[in-house]
Length: 130
Length: 71
Image 1 (cartoon, rainbow over the protein chains, first blue to last red):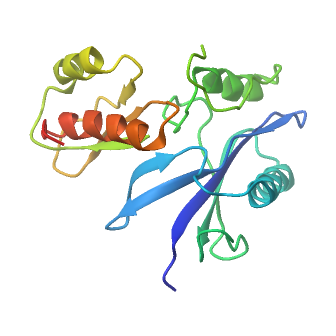
Image 2 (tube, chains in turn purple, blue; image 1 turned 45 degrees about the horizontal axis):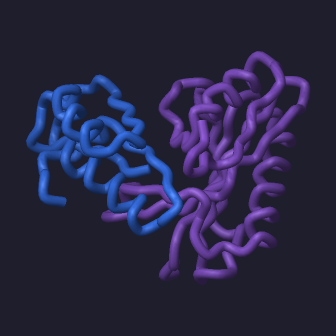
């Protein structure tokens, strides 16, 4: 199948079940290697974005993830990602500092999740932000 | 976010000076790995209001660290 683009949903979850979902990212692949990501994914409507976040949160919850988890989906068309196809989920070592974190607060979010402290704000950093 | 792959520059920390002098909104993570062609050695993140400009800034920094100052 000739996929139009690849999207991913990143969530964090704490031992007690607190969770936060980051804005959906688009990853740009070249020769099978991720060269760039864009967050939030351009031209993704809210319904699909929220559905993807909910799916990632559900997967993290059912797997009992502590720390951060990423789910990827290949979008067969630009506007209507087919989340059920080619779903991948991985658990990453928490707080490695190597995640594709768009915000400074994200580190706090992931550390907070591992330690079960209040989670930070997963919103993308905006112009003029901290 | 733009990934940095090993290119023609071995001393990535020194190359950062150019990147940070040019763009104050960059954040760069270098993994401390030995540079080998094509090996993922770091990534650049930044943010902004204009998507095209933001991508261009991230790509420039990543390309510079890969040894292509004209990207």
